[in-house]
Every structure is written in structure tokens, then in C-alpha cells.
Image (cartoon, rainbow, N blue to C red; front, side, top):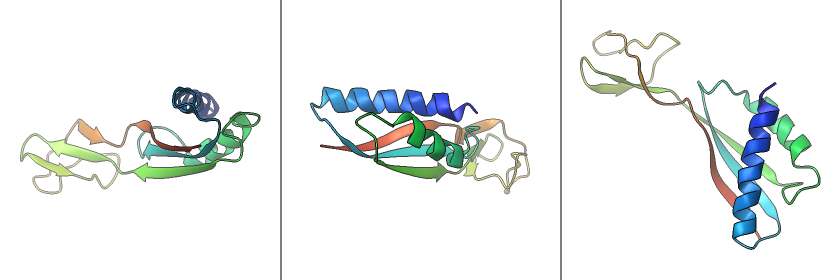
Length: 113
């Protein structure tokens, strides 16, 4: 379950940002989770409850937004959302290897005081 180590890293970043702003409490964190990031959002939420205990983020709201996969077709030069794990362009039916969105895990925002 690599979500625990990923959440530890995201929380460390959040705590560093909160400290740099001179704040003492994190009320909410928003994470963007790409559909192809290899991360299970439910496991992240479970991990957050564990790793935030005893920190400035204890009791904070965790908001998870799933980011869809977007690919680019070099043949017809269109962006598209693949229907499955085969990145077939719906316009020209060419196969793309250019994934432009959906593989990331990003700490998008914090609410602090």
C-alpha cells in the first residue's frame, strides 16, 4: 500500500507550506488524483486519517478530485479522452503514446489558519 508513503509526502509538503505561512492549523487539503496515477483514492483517504494524527492537519477535510486521462493524437492533432487502456484516437483510430493528463498526484490547495 504505497498510498501511505504518498500521503506522508503530501502531508509533509502541506505542513511545510502551512509553517512557511505562519499558520498553525490545516483545515482542508485538496489533492488531484490522476486516473492513471496508480493511486487508489479510498486508500489515500484511509492513509490521511492515520498520518495526520497528532499533526496540524488532524481532523482536516481531505478533498480528492479525480483527473481524467487526456491523450494527444500526433496523427490528427487532437486531444482526446481514451475509452480504456488502449489510447485509440476516436477521430482517426490511431494509437497514441502521448498522455497529457491523468498520471499525476498533486497537492492542489490548502485551507489554513
